[in-house]
Length: 611
Image (cartoon, rainbow, N blue to C red; front, side, top):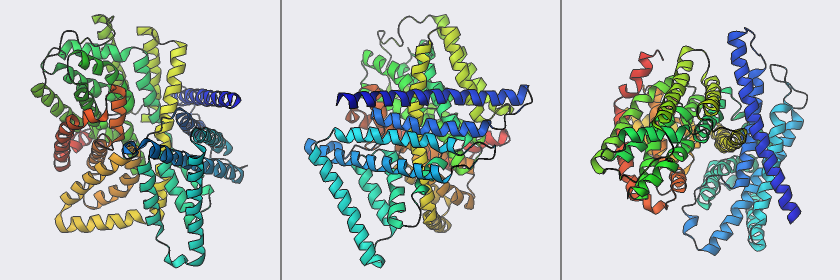
């Protein structure tokens, strides 16, 4: 057993370090590409292909490391209410499902690697560099999943394996003897999806398992299709902005910029009525405009302001509820990761989405601030924000540095100097330089730890994107989007486009509460966007509605995964936040309805900026 533990430790460490190194290499490739194109007039024709290959490697290696850490998000609301012994049995079954999905990905990736051997991409780079890291990551993932299974009682694991085997055998016998009486594959996938989700299977594995059910039960597509679609789901240069902006968020926290900036805000507004809550909303506005990562923002702001709320006598559940609501508000503040993902899957201008989200986020921020001032009280003198050693000049410098980063992101993108992905790479370089020179808190050791953490977090997010893209492709093959589009068009034709907007909001809130935000957008964005266009709804306006609706669902009790994350960071129980967050979500829902029925809130800035 000691040898097994040692093996797992070194494999996990190696996977995390490799993912971090490849993330750093991706930064260098993207930076070199921009500099070569603009200053040396020597574009690197291979840079896009290499950057995409590195992104695939970072994604799946990071996802494997996240599995080893036990950080994959899943809905545990239902299983948490079961007796301990029943919970153990279900958790054992969940672990077995993860082994099956990981092993299937590993096996089919090896087959795909063999099938593409000798092939090259447009720039002449071998296909193997795309699929070989995926194969290594899937093998590591399988190893970590097996280790998880070994932690459960043997009889529980055997019972889970027997149950899954019996169900699979029954399906095969049914298919052999009475294939015409079998239920539609869509129904089977839906049943498997709901059962796995309720059992607490991590979201990415729920999505991947649903795709595997189609591949195995349908007998239409080869197994390599599963691995190919998982890789193809994130094989896009645009998605590189996701790990880069996540990295910016963690760098800001590590280099001391976050705590100084929050301290500066508290100096300005902290003594007002409801001042601490106002500072929390403003902090989320600023950090979301820099890092693009919701969980990085929540960690940076919550780790400072929730303890301050405790010192001031405020209920921590109230503080965490406002923190979660502020994260919803910040969903449309660029460079939000979900705006980038929606632009990618729905083929929308990312710059246009960035502009479209500004006024809606300003409306929601103003509503939360007004509510905080009306219902709040003055902050107690002992509620000190920060570490206590920040000078006023240091806080001002931090504020200037933060706004310099915002100017870099918006100015670089708007000027056409670089794409959103390339700007995100320069934002990382900026954050590193600021930490090393201005604050002198960024050491090589800190930088290495931050890169490892960012690689793992990026892997978690993009693995969900990959699995959701594979499932979305399967749903397209089954013409599900077409059927839903026809239904929505018929309803809207009879009652007006307002019915479509209201239904869209309800769909995204419900699905956003059950799925991780990116997954809900990937599945429903391409499905609903063509209907919006057909009904004359502006795509950028509708994109903002989708993102905000998904955000409300993501943080809505009792299923919202984002709310669980905020509670973990704030150190409070979910039950303490339920009633407080409902009032904030009510305010945000009212804002969303205003955004939906006043299109100019979303379209004015994009039109003025030429999008």
